[in-house]
Length: 166
Image (cartoon, rainbow, N blue to C red):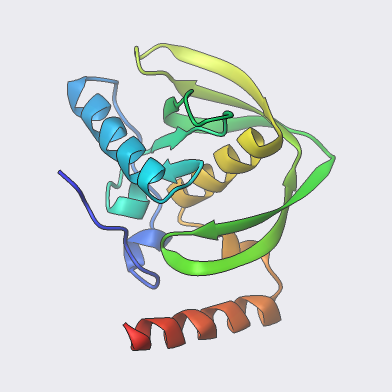
């Protein structure tokens, strides 16, 4: 099943997602669907609510050649470095718009892996940025929320104009 990306301002993009009770074949099927959508974008991460799946599920693959996907249920940030790393971010939910966002350079995340085991893992660089971006989605937050009010209004005005052209 291929679900379309929700477009801003769909209210589901501003909704906190429900936790996953456990990892089963249904969750694994959603992860597979999410990975297919992520690779088709192309992107380095995707969260469930981006395609209308309102559970705390994300996929990330910031590896060279995009051959090492990581599937996470109920991810939470346990620790974030004080050092910030600016990166350009975007989202298929606000297509064709990008902005620089400062996020911690490294994070420690606790999550359920594809076997249902609880794991703690450290991420740095693009991996850390993507994981944080996806966890924001699970909490109803978008990359534009990290921008100044002026920059956010400018991007949202461009988005509205782009949507009218469709």
